[in-house]
Length: 196
Image (cartoon, rainbow, N blue to C red; front, side):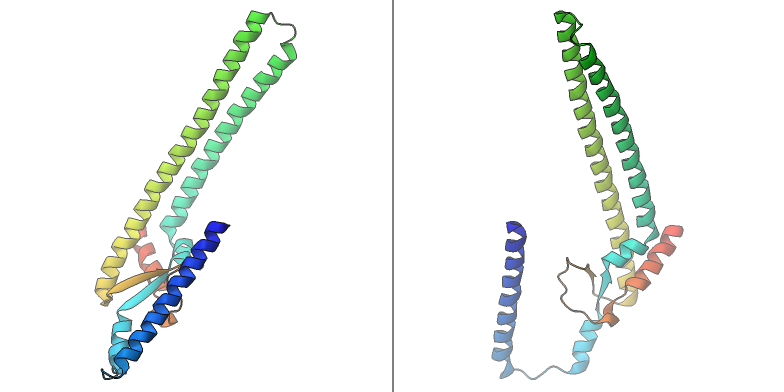
């Protein structure tokens, strides 16, 4: 909670500083330079567009297929882990029912065996989780590369100098005219490229 507050406070402070510096710069430059023509501003603005990454991810078929594949692997791993845990719990319950009737040496060896099995089960769980995370990271990198490569070609073809990303709740863009939003066009192009 404190980190979020500090992070938001830092962002607000940075935005305020940038605003103050920009207004000071504007005041200093107001008397020394002629105002820029409106057409020059429009021309430079047209060279920068943005893509809504939330929409991109929900409508890009490659991402949907990737998510389905990773969700299925995760569910399979969870099912496998749950069955191993249930088998272990049954074994523990069976031991607990018999422990009073077992000789001390057999009780000790069974407890050691169960402790080893529990450690193995924990290690299996951690390894399976790490493997899934690694695969997800690899696939996310491939996704990023696919989108970035497509956007390079797209931007060059359209004459754009920069393509920004916008994501609700996590964006450096505070306001952008909707005419600069090329998300729909990019999604159509990405899906067409993916179908090939």
